[in-house]
Length: 285
Ligand code: BYC
Image (cartoon, rainbow, N blue to C red; front, side, top):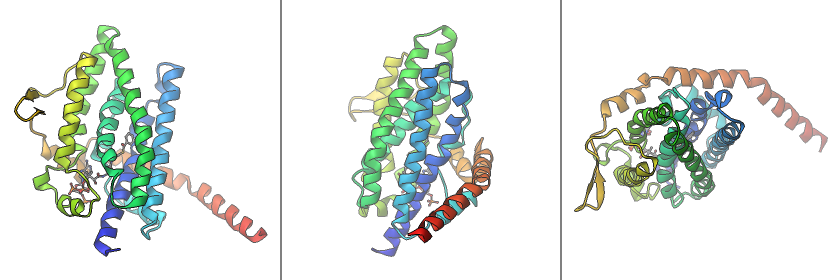
């Protein structure tokens, strides 16, 4: 395997794994405040799925000759990135809907393409992840639809959540193709099957139709159907904000890393106990 191909895969798969694990935090914030048992069960199941996705992805990265501990240290030291989206706060219950519908929706758009990526362990992990993500997206959409049909206050709360999550979701696809340092090589290696801009456009085209069913709007005055292109046109993304979040200056970057560091430290005894148990079992064979 060419060394550069291996390194690129470790970078992307580990960042993807970290995103799944850090991504549990914004939603975890609402488990105790879910408005009904049905909503709580669905949210808990979704967040557990994200932990599972992290595990498949760390395992896929380990097949490339790097240990889980090394990968995790890169996250905790701030060296490895995770998706920018998880550095935004979840302020109201409607955010659970917006995250499910928009964030998981953007994630699926990207991950369906990765099911056909050239590296088998990554592609196979994605097949299962995508099945679960589509449930997550429906869960988010159904939650927003319920709020949309509720009281004027509930409708307004859902609209506010969509307004706040729309642009950060658009940023999940990464920089424009012209500013994406890795895209050309990753497309040649067939790690990426579609470019950042192609996937972003597919996402806009999907969401611009679904929002009509929700009886809501997207916070983009430039959004309109372009008959000639056969796609929706949309406004300019604030790349300054994106770059600030990547540099660690988003609204929740410090809080997210602090939570992961705390979990790592407080979980030390669990890891030690599991290792001691494994060693004891090996001795008895
Ligand atoms: N955020 O040349 P580019 C989920 C970085 S979790 C942060 O286009 P590439 C969920 C990029 O890494 C699913 N960084 O790079 C979980 C690179 O930096 P480095 C998350 C970003 O790799 C819980 C630099 O910018 N999905 O669904 O060719 C609850 C230049 O970019 C971002 C994935 O992780 C960003 N948004 O393409 C709910 C998908 N965008 O490495 C939901 C897997 C770019 O040189 N990853 N960067 O320091 C990918 O598909 C690709 O890595 C990307 C970027 C399309 C994101």
